[in-house]
Image 1 (cartoon, rainbow, N blue to C red):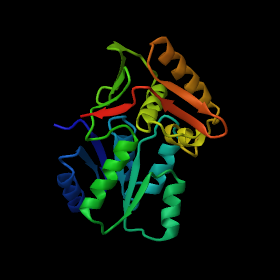
Image 2 (cartoon, rainbow, N blue to C red; image 1 turned 90 degrees about the vertical axis):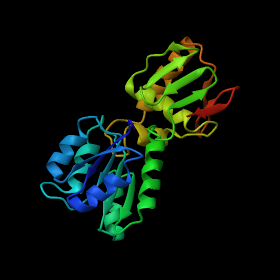
Image 3 (cartoon, rainbow, N blue to C red; image 1 turned 180 degrees about the vertical axis):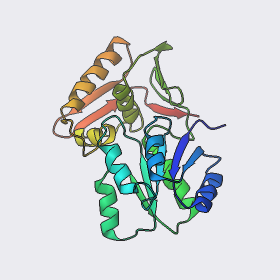
Amino acid sequence: MTSTNILLIEDDQELALGIQRFLKNAATVQIETNGLTGQAAGETGAFDLVILDLMLPGKSGYEILKTWRQQDQLNLPVLILTAKDTLADKAQGFELGADDYLVKPFHREELLMRVKALLRRSGHDVTLENLTQANLSVDLQTRQVTVAANELPLAGKEYDLLVYFLQNPNIIITKAQIFERLWGFDSTTAQTVVEVYLSNLRKKLKQAHANLTIRTIRNAGYLLESPAGTRNEK
């Protein structure tokens, strides 16, 4: 039984049921056919990803996405799935904060690939249960972090930041990339918040004697380093 939960907001019930059946081995899919109930469901914190239609009764997908992205604590990955196929439609979707955009009709296999990619980027990879580097391990299902078998308590954004680095070992990540990933590019929060959370995470890792370092690369960004390297465990 998978612990990955997807919210599908789609008013075409036949299509929605077809997607639900197709994705059943990757995730549990809850269907909402109305924009208002769909938005409310997305704000419960119960989902790892949303597949969102744009033309919905009650409230449009554009309105839902705009509302969500104005909430700093709601950074759900959102895949727009719609028949609206113009460049202007796509631009509007991405400007409002969509993470991906797929036009109907679509290949089911492509939908699955895009869903898996978004889950992987957001730390909810359906093929992984743990991320491990040196003496630190993260259980992606329970969100528990341990260093040498001792639990390391992290605040929400500290955890998200650590997972982002673990998913991109030995790769320079810019401050802007971190900010967009954790807070959203249209957040009213200042980018300096990244430095605050980085400082807190570094202190906690040092106090826990984690055998890894988040190094600042001048005029470039940040790099997670460990003499032991990184491995992902199923």
